[in-house]
Image (cartoon, rainbow, N blue to C red; front, side):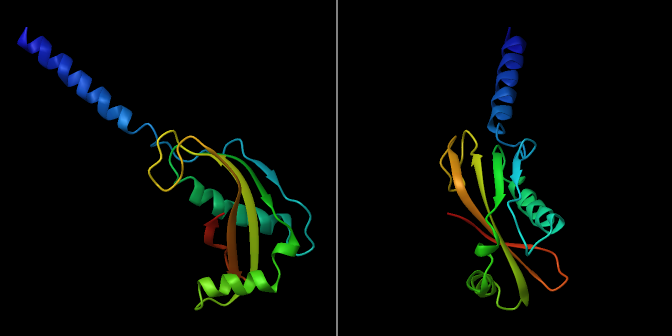
Length: 142
């Protein structure tokens, strides 16, 4: 009987440990709707490469699911925005910046500053790049 109880207790403990990692799945971007908007400044490839940087970050947000991401337009990539990006990393020689907004649902049990199981919309992502460089994600949030 003692062996049986030990096995049952061990199984119960193992199952409870597994449930602690319910949010261990990477952020889900598989069904994200992308809106490229219109741009005279950036090609679709430029926008795609910036979105990929956002997706790479989002995948680290365990248990989250992104619904939409959209390019906010050339008017949001003006000199003021570029100066803002430069202020975030003064050592970089940024020549371009780009801004996206997204909507997503958070994980059921968040402990990273987000509200649990909530939809966030108009969440901004700011990226910049140096001449002939890769996009760098500088900041995100509301």
